[in-house]
Length: 277
Ligand code: HPA
Image (tube, rainbow, N blue to C red; front, side, top):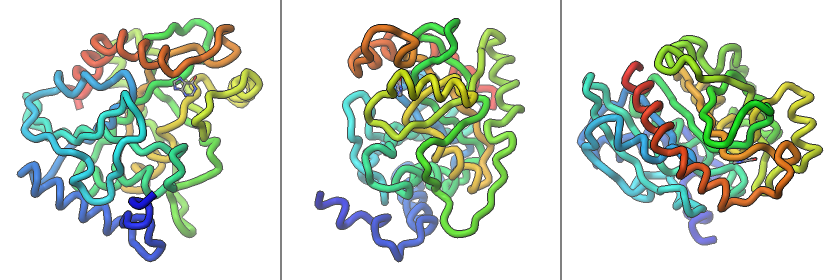
């Protein structure tokens, strides 16, 4: 692929934080907004939230910003938006996630998070669509991420960078989200590499080791966000029961449809939570 040859993060000598600083400078120039306060990555099912958070003052193609890759997937929008909330906060909405399973390396996976930090954002809200393990959960239900298990075997940290991950998914922000919706449940998110869905045996393993949610994103981004000093809030939309918990085969189309059906409700919830940040 030609873009993997020219991509600034693929040069082993590149400093990923310098590339993120360049991206933040692009965002400031193209949006006319020098600093953002909050960043929000929209996973499948969460796309409509951007319309409800406030006034969109600029929309950028992610590919116009240094280091961002074209989206790999239908259902994932490749744009960045700058939104002004009614309380005067600037929100950078990232609709352009690079997934680990795309095989472009972790630097590209976490570039959006490092860029968000370089724009000044102190809060990182990560959302995704995922499979549910808890039998009481139903597709279409949003849940808070309370902690994670990173099963990729990989890390965005380079060198001997020892980062504390206690309270990675901020207790304070989870409490705040539950203040908006007291019925919100929470669980431990397990990131598998993907892109294949898990086997029932892998889901049983995830359950045994303490997982409640299975997905293919988020953990590497959360680690990078913590490294950059941001406070993190994570939401999963349960689009399906995980393999073996549901007895029918999983299909990407059904996952997308569940996301679309839930979108109005969970987007309104997310917008209300963002309004409280
Ligand atoms: N597993 C992994 N990723 C997912 C799932 C799942 O069941 N559903 C949506 N994304």
